[in-house]
Length: 296
Image 1: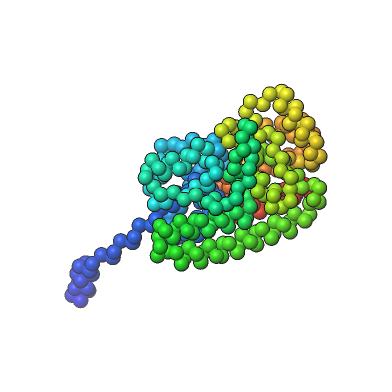
Image 2: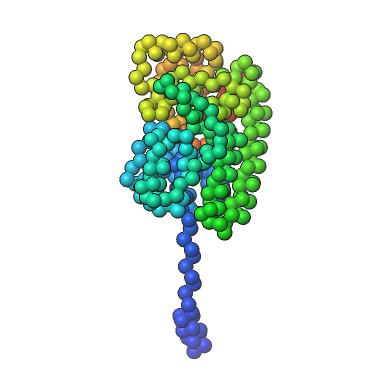
């Protein structure tokens, strides 16, 4: 008993284990970017996302809670190309004095026409080839933030980049089921131009682009008739709604045009936890299967 008492006394006076170092916090604007970051950092960093699944980055208005999240960041990541309407992510980072990296840096963007102006299409992640650029840009930013973790970041990214190449090949294989002349993708807004470019689809978004306004806002009877006529002229079996855009307008237009709604596509945001689209690869996989099922 005396020996046990002496042992307990000795243990009492042992120095406490050193506190584990605080993990770096990465705050991302969109769900896609947050997923890319998680694939790269593993458990080395904490990844937080401003947008919730299903939210529209074009029309999003940051809250005081978002500012508090940004305040915890060691690094902020944004899509760029004005996906974040009024550059809200860059503003959050600047107001809190946080460094920010733009994931589309170095990409050659497509152009859209909105309000009579030419603008860069910000939906670049819909090309797996572009997604690889996002990943590489994130690795560079993380390595500057945490140089000792560079080897880990690069190793995880190497595996994920292989998965993106496999995804790209798989998508091309799946779309062999759709005749080239039937590859017309009619969606709620202009989110799929990079996707259509890569996989031989004609992209059509008769309702408009959602930046600055909810899709379908200000639809006049004349505009509505023109949209219905254009959908009919496409000769498609189905049109598609999107998870981040109110589907009501497209559903009504499809009914008037006499075409089916082929399903819901993940667009500006991924799915929530537990859904098939909660990761980038899952989102792309489910979109492809939905398109094939509706159009083949």
